[in-house]
Amino acid sequence: MPDAPGFPALHSRDAFDPTAGGVGTLPRSWARHFADAPSRSALTTSAGRTLDYAALDRASAAAAGRLHGAGLRPGDRILLSAEASLDLVVAHVACLRLGLVVVPTNTAYRAPEIAHVVGDATPRAAIVDAAERADAVRAADAGVAVLEPTIPLPDAAPPPLDVAAPEAPALIGYTSGTTGRPKGAVLAHANLLASVESLRVAWRWTADDHLVLALPLFHMHGLGVGLHGTLHAGASAHLLPGFAPAAVLDAIAATDATLFFGVPTMYHRLVDSPGADAMRTLRLCVSGSAPLPASLHARFEALTGQRILERYGMTETVMLVSNPVDGERRPGTVGVPLPGVEVRLEGSPPEIQVRGPNVFAGYWQREDANALAFTSDGWFRTGDLGERDEAGYLRIAGRAKELIISGGYNVYPREVEDALRAHTAIEDAAVVGTPSEEWGEVVTAYVVGADVPPLDALRAFLADHLAPYKRPRRLHVVDALPRNALGKVQKHLLSATEPSEASAT
Ligand code: MCA
Ligand code: AMP
Image (cartoon, rainbow, N blue to C red; front, side):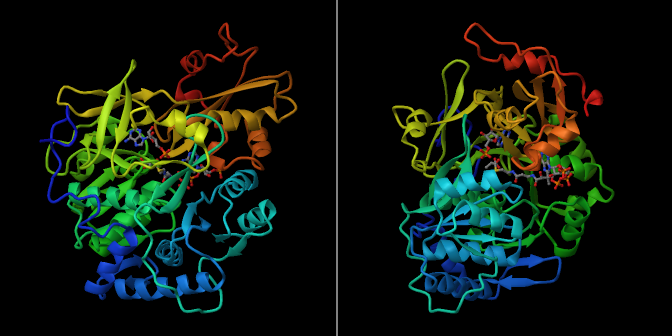
């Protein structure tokens, strides 16, 4: 009997149990590997650093002791905003083992974006790897203890670790969902565990796997799938501080890697890179966070022999739906629900609604948003539109929510419009996503005003307000925005007039 009625049962159902055999939380899952496989490699870097499970246990326990000695207690929020590194991983593992609630925060954020997260999540501490972001945290709240990823605090004996309850909050991921300022999706320990257990089963992730991890560790893809999945499977990952095709290909060749996870923009850059054939040796290449064009799927297969496995997820739910490892992978679809996940298509046009042990319980202190995010019978409304293809696979047919996905990063038009309207020359602004081969979509602004500065000057103006990936890459000055009788901008009319990519700035 399939988990998700209406979808073919394609994933392995090998012993799927959302509690992973009763362990209940990620820290308790990791503790099994600390005890059973101490000398197995957990993390490697291109600088030649490695951490086995025993070293990860020792280093994270020591870091947890220092954080506890400084007064941090279970349930306290701690903002983490740093480039991927062994120190960051140790800090993250320490926080979860201690029962702190991690608030991963994009390193590209500017001061106002950081101030919003600090003001909303009210962290007691922050782990940050750049002076500018440290200053932004302190400016937002002088009471936050700001630390480097090495956590340079006096040593102290840790309290009992790995004792957080499955229902206790583990992570707050900021995401806008539908509209407005980013909201914090509160993921419980049980949600994080259920999702990686489901992936372990469906993707046949074992201790023999070695992942090349070039995704940032401040979003669910790199953190909740790449890092958590690796450590849950007792496997290993090669950490890269950022994405560069040559570094990824070198790491694959040098480390006997078996897995690579990326966003479509990464695959787009890899197919254009010399030596991409090195990916041929991998067991599995996974794509997600944004739609993978079927043409890119085909080009990648021709070059590397790999049929990319596309999957679909959200910050609020971690992973939901995936193409199968063993069965047919269908380009242009995201596959079928993962073990334990239920998916239904409701309304017209049909919205994807989900339920399962991986799905969060609600947004941080946002009862108003929670009332809209869940149906009266308890399903989470993704805001994505879906349909089944002829083989029963789920295809994402569009979005009911206003969201632009550029290079796998989400951009909420409203945030960009507000920042643009703060410019004295701009009377009105509307922001939409327009197609791009490299980025999937690019942020495109339509503005009204007599003396609107050129795009470069506008981007420079926005630099104080918005992360670089949110700043428009295309600009159109128009006489007026198309509005309906209620005064609402008809954005579909704007994107329909977008000139071809060649004419873009
Ligand atoms: C960087 N820039 C971008 C983006 N990334 N602009 C638009 N969209 C982007 N995604 C800016 C840079 O700041 C720089 O701006 C200019 O573009 C050129 O940078 P470049 O060096 O080419 O970019 P990069 O640093 O190589 O980054 C490209 C990237 C990166 C590696 C594709 O965007 C990335 O890591 N994306 C992954 C995002 C991710 O992890 N998403 C998962 C969300 P300037 O010229 O002004 O300096 S989690 C999620 O969605 C759910 C759970 C799911 O399903 O996974
Ligand atoms: P986030 O809020 O950053 O977690 O982004 C989640 C959103 O990314 C989803 O609601 C989808 O709109 C989108 N997304 C994730 N994976 C895919 C995919 N494979 N294809 C299309 N959209 C995706």
